[in-house]
Length: 221
Image 1 (cartoon, rainbow, N blue to C red):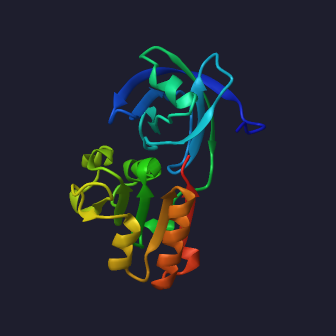
Image 2 (tube, rainbow, N blue to C red):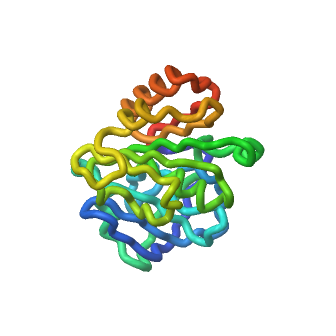
């Protein structure tokens, strides 16, 4: 998707970190680029007309930009970006989006961050951007090796739900964990992942007494 009124810029790749056979982190120079944790960018290899949208994985204080990408079997851009090497150029547009944190609220409220798969990316940016957050992440994946860089989070604040193996804290889908472990009533909840997960979790949380205005959701980019 192209966003009118936003220019793109060419930036140099710094590093590509492989996390699983299909997931990787692409790191590139930041330049004079401002964003808020939770926003996303459009990205593609320079010289190619195709771009895709990815949530920013790095934090506001970092002097680089990172995105967490899962290679899509039938996709084009995710495969092309995976082939880049340090010094290659990417084109970037943005930032876009409003899946951001209210700074006044985060100082006083408990945050429950719920993600499926690579939907954890904006939460990684939140935590790198704001010290002292009172949060828990509930991360739903199929296999334990998809707990992308879980050591970046406080061990007592990260709950891994694995549906295909028993390597997580909870065996089953994250919806099953939430049904058995309701959050405190005053929680502010953030949901990021595929649309089916978001709809299911919204129903669970509102049924547990979470106010609709305290639930913020974004289909993962």
